[in-house]
Image 1 (spheres, protein in one colour):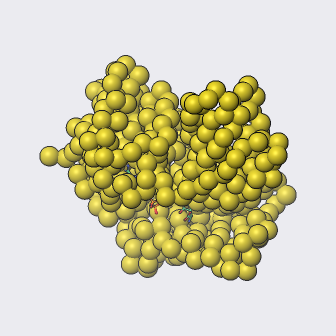
Image 2 (cartoon, protein in one colour; image 1 turned 135 degrees about the vertical axis):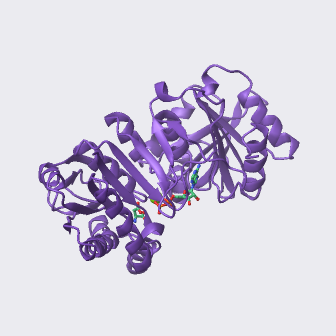
Length: 406
Ligand code: ADP
Ligand code: ASP
Ligand code: MG
């Protein structure tokens, strides 16, 4: 007997037929003698629709009311799944974020979970009751509803698994695990049996949306055993594990892309100490996260061009912030470009092997793809390229690192 948290994403609960299928899966685990807690997303597409309703009234909305609206998608599926479970003779009930409670900070729209008071849930699970928790939602210290940022139901599931000390947290989705690259783009992507927390964290943070980054962070911190698997089949998925559980470490385990990038260039910036601090200070004050940075060599020793990336959603704000400081910063022009994509290669093997980055640069050069900006970390190399080459680059790199399925 095990204690399991099962999380079902939007495509797994997209209509009543799928919710009934999910109920069968949950019943299967209960019949096998397991204690089960369930976390559900909104039906696929519903959260987007709710966000669009809010935007239609005002794009400069009150984030507290945004949360009241967008958190409702999950409430619907939690009630529907509880009903489907009851129809199968199970003792099931829904339990909303504020009812558990899932306590968060007050950063509405992207709140962080601070604690889950799960005593009652544990008691119910021990008595064989199936608790269905809507993901994505929590409650702020002042009692108002919060949401955890897009894709946040993964984090709800991992947090619940940690709080009830579950043996396993199964993330059910529309693909059968974590692949070497997005299987919807790279047809030859291979499913990984296991991946380390570190690699999964890097992959999620640079675009593999199969898990929300914070959910991996939390799983790593609380040592939650995490499995990504398909709700459409019974095949085993991908286990996210500690490094010690990986027998044979691949050099590169994943290749990802993130289209949510914008490139900003300041031309003719003075080439003297303190300039970078003067530029990035106002951006930090405006809560804009700067990612990749490149400073060109100055031809005359006096001025240089500075290029960096921000999230596409922050592009306009970044440009306005810098324009407002133009006299202080002393650049000539500010250029911005959204037709860029960040492609990243991730692998623990990079810590002990040289030449990984070089292989990436050559493979892209062979396809005539120009690299605009480069950044690296201990287990990752990222490049910024023109968006129209996304698919070509992913497939070329997948092949170059020998990851293609036979
Ligand atoms: P859910 O609705 O279940 O939360 P998501 O759409 O958030 O599902 O995440 C699943 C999707 O993640 C897949 O359909 C796939 O296109 C995408 N994805 C991106 N990179 C990867 C990867 N490396 N492995 C598996 N899936 C990936
Ligand atoms: N429904 C939310 C979203 O679409 C949360 C989730 O599905 O994880 O972002
Ligand atoms: Mg998701």
